Image 1: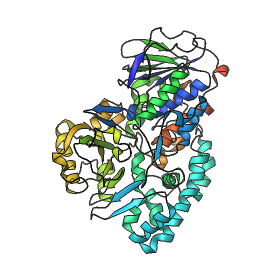
Image 2 (image 1 turned 120 degrees about the horizontal axis):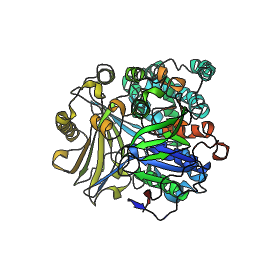
Image 3 (image 1 turned 60 degrees about the vertical axis):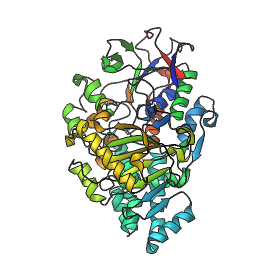
Image 4 (image 1 turned 45 degrees about the horizontal axis):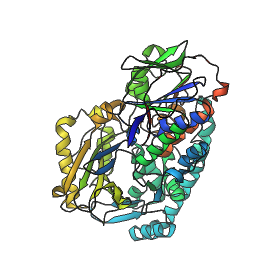
Amino acid sequence: MLTPSQAVAPGDPTQPHAVIIGSGFGGLAAAVRLGARGYRVTVLEQLDAPGGRGYVHRQDGFTFDAGPTVITAPFLFEELWALCGRRLADDVDLRPVSPFYRVRFHDGTSFDYSGDAEAMRREVARLSPSDVDGYEQFLQASEAIYRVGFEQLGHVSFERWTDMARVLPDLLKLEGYRTVWGLACKHVKNEKLRVVLTFQSLLVGGNPFSTTSVYCLIAFLERRFGVHFAMGGTGALVRGLVGLIDGQGGRVRCGVSVQEILVEEGAACGVRLASGERITADVVVSNADSAWTYRHLLPAQHRRHWTDRRIERARYSMSLFVWYFGTRRQYPDVAHHTISLGPRYRGLLDDIFTHKHLADDFSLYLHRPTATDPSLAPPGCDTFYVLSPVPHLEAGVDWQSRGEPYRAAIARRLSETLLPGLESEVISSLMLTPQDFQDRLSAYKGAAFSLEPVLTQSAWFRPHNRSEEVERLYLVGAGTHPGAGLPGVLSSARVLDAVVPHARDLPRRVSHPIQEGLAHVRPA
């Protein structure tokens, strides 16, 4: 549990001050990296506890991770602990999950997707014997994309169009002009297998039928590093990161909302809170949604690139309907991660992304963390969440009236398939709708993953990590380069090492220390 404390002294007031807006994984990682480079860091979070989309709900003895549950590329977390002279394993127990996902098709057949090369060949052969060689070719293509798209470019700032021009030959060679679906279709013929190889793009907010095939790197990323889960829930990683910031002398303030990024002489110089309080800073880093940052936090007179019109006309990811629930019984046959597909794939995604229509059918991601960590539920019980991709708020759905009927429809579907008798077994329940993504998490249009990851909104075309608008303003998180997902947002914080000067090299513009007595948050 996180509690306020005044026990640890603040950082040295002579150090340059970095203010970070938002305590999602991108913001917390940025705080650790800047703290390691000599900055005195203050993280500002509007919720009552840190985490952002990684917030933790505790209710009726159940622990519900609000957001990211698929942990890949654990070395990105290990880097953060190493910067503080510690080991990730000192604070967080990561456990491998196998299978990575159990994909359940609408006809009741299933496919266990794992990191075991031989087991995967057997699964592919069981589904479509003629596609085994094609599957191996797809994985080789995924590795080639990973080597360039993740290892070489994932933590590089695209600040000039020439940066993009330099990588275009590689992207063309790797067929980045194809979509995720298009690359899968090039290598395999079976429709079910094509779905198995493309649904992962939805986990970062992308429609596989329009998202650049660069995101096919996820397949090799998972194969190489595995899929993991943090014992105690994803919130254990949040608590661990807050502990690192605490040890650096940084501060995490919760329950404070940033109203405006302050600018003087063309440079960010601090923030103004909704309470009227002003906090001065030498640099400002926004982990808030990039569209929200520019549309609502940086006044229009300071924006030449990301104007209101451009923000409004950009393409945004889908949103999510999430139902968290606890059951009085256990379902031991249900995997940790299950993808439950509906009767339509492309048609449903067209409804969500193109037509902005809330369909009657759905595909679901079911998360059962108690498959790995039973402590997240009372004895004899199970903790779940199920999410359904839905259109963002441009669809005009009144979620106040539609939310409960939609939840009930999902409950019926689960009761008829994966969780027999579910409707009479639920003893704890909580919902998150697209409206909550906007109102609670400040996600523009309620888009759960910010800008849609199409080619024309990737790399240089995305809001830059070093703001194009004003000096000393930086962006991290899903809405900037390289994009959504835990590896993406952690990599966005890595970019800061290249674009934010070390504290000792930063010319001082602001010398006022922050107000004394600000709440400090640390793990209890």
